[in-house]
Amino acid sequence: MLAAVLYGKEHIQVEPVAVPSIGEGDVLVRVKAALTCGTDVKVFRRGYHARMIIPPAVFGHELAGDVVEVGENVTKFQVGQKVVAANSAPCQECFFCRRGYENLCEDLLFNNGAYAEYIRIPARIVERNMYEIPDGVSYQDAALVEPLACVLKAVEETGLREGDNVAVIGLGPIGLMFVRLAKSVGARVIALGRRKTQLNRAAALGAEELISTTEFHDSVAVVRGLTAGRGADVAIEAVGKPHIWELCVHMVRKGGTVNFFGGCPSESHVSLDTSLLHYSEITCKASFHHTPAHIRKSLELIRRKIITARDFVNGEEPLSNLLEVMRHLMSHNGHLKTAIIP
Image (cartoon, rainbow, N blue to C red; front, side, top):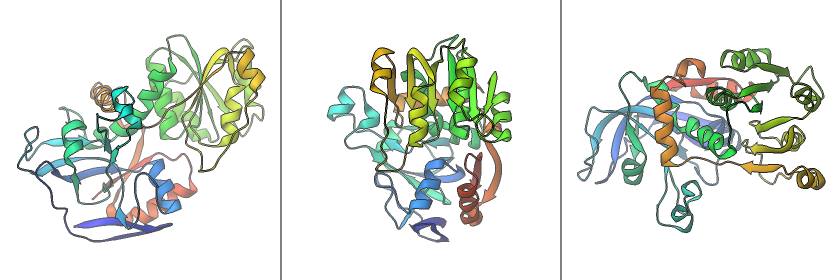
């Protein structure tokens, strides 16, 4: 089969490799759509991911496809089914799993290899985090399930409620998912982004207030001006830059909540005003990854058309063009997803 192999920093080769062999609990899936992701771009730029992928390796992790082979012990799936598989599965036995933090599992099994004609889904994911695609849901829609599950988990943990003023900073695909989900729970969304195209997309997904961060140097003052001077109830950082993390703390009202969703570069540090945090009782929350329960909830939102690929995927490219796609995404931060069709 053809697959995109990551060899190191900005080094991808689309080349023939062996079709993965499967074990007794595994499933082999023919990839029908694999979506690009900001994490994949970071992996491409850095040449590795300490927890997810060590080169040389086939990479990519947002996928949907058809079952073409099942292991002898597999009973939940059969050849011909349309399926979506998450990129991880918890052990369900460790300290964190037993306490409901499956995303922090001490033996969290990651799976990569979506940028290929076929991918092996390991037994643990087959058993705990792979699902049949509902009728009426396209492959590209279904492939959104993993990033949406991460956003859904953050929305739940942040406690978004109807009537809240929510500031979303960063309007790439993840930020736009926050806009859509916040709107779906009845919040008033204040969207902050650098580009007019991003702001227009946010408006189309329900944002009532749009702030261009290239025009307004003091975004905090603008947000406060839109919230009777108090500040937002919730601020969500979907950029992944330390200075934006710090900015968000000043953007919320007394008793407000900040969600540091965007992952910053390794070894990053932030400086927070302790008096502000203490006397204003500001809650700082970070959300990472997803759980099988959030994958299932995410797939249901997609089935109900609350999230659809047409809002987050802006084109298709063959696997042979992946290197050019990655280079383009590196130079166009916040760009929508591209569907890679092996």
